Length: 209
Image (cartoon, rainbow, N blue to C red; front, side, top):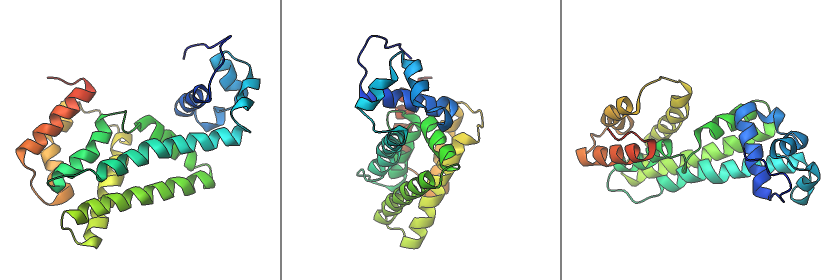
């Protein structure tokens, strides 16, 4: 991270440093002095923006909520001509870090295992996301109960997929997109839907073969 000595840092600078530390070393190291040293500034400037470390941690959770769950919900609500196209909108979160920060998600969920209040907020965010995904399925004529189960399968499989570290290339993953879509929906995708998603994925992962 760029050293900001002799520079007035902003609230966002503190949040960015805290987020990087959370991802790299865990919430235990998100401390005012540690972050000040990391940025090369006086820790007194911290109190211009935050009342306490707890206030900073709340800001981190709010940033996660506004980024990852909110992005997936927004993707679920995009117009789509078919359920397979709708799920490809969700999968854009996986290939575009601007939509969904996977390392941050891992870090927040690890934090939640240690803190009941954080767990409650993660659980609430998961419930909102699953509800949006279920609504996406019902919009495409699935029974409400089936829609909920398919939403959970889609969501929790996606969260666990990267944690499994299968060490496959993006081209290997893309070769299986049509099979995953069939498994998630019970409906075969149109070739153009798969092709459009593959082009999007290559554009955002640098896989242009």
